[in-house]
Image (cartoon, rainbow over all chains, first blue to last red; front, side, top):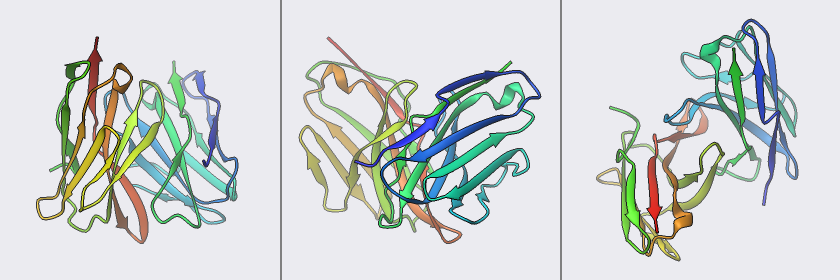
Length: 116
Length: 112
């Protein structure tokens, strides 16, 4: 089946620093990638949708200048959390969809971010 | 009203029990429906799609009622390995994009 990887799997950083998370589709070309955030005991919340080669579409309430998304190739999308604060501590999960699939998304293993 | 609502959990059941999860969704334009399973600190994984005609996969049966905007998942003969959080997921078009909306999840704990 389709495999999506994320790196790093967990990261601890100090308040005010920036963190970059990578999401890669390993055996298919992902025309669309999605970034989700999940706080403890909460549902996955879609942050943004990115299509290769174009700007990401952010969900309401998600600051595009704080959460920078780049989808420069068909196998890689990155999420950069700029000037991270403790309230940004969360589980960040990406998913990817190939051109042939209308609905199915393949999820990465997630990145646990802790901001101290 | 939340877009996707699920039974509050957790559900504690003994091995071998039958357990049912319910889910309602608010967007009548939703097009496809899924149950995902999420283990603690892991990504969600697709368990099964849900069709109006109902579908079964081994011990798992999913049902969809579009008129009531209601989805269910039945697990028969529960195993210890079924312990996880079950997420009801709905797909709809949103500003031209197909997006998934997740319920909060219902935790299942199967005990020996």
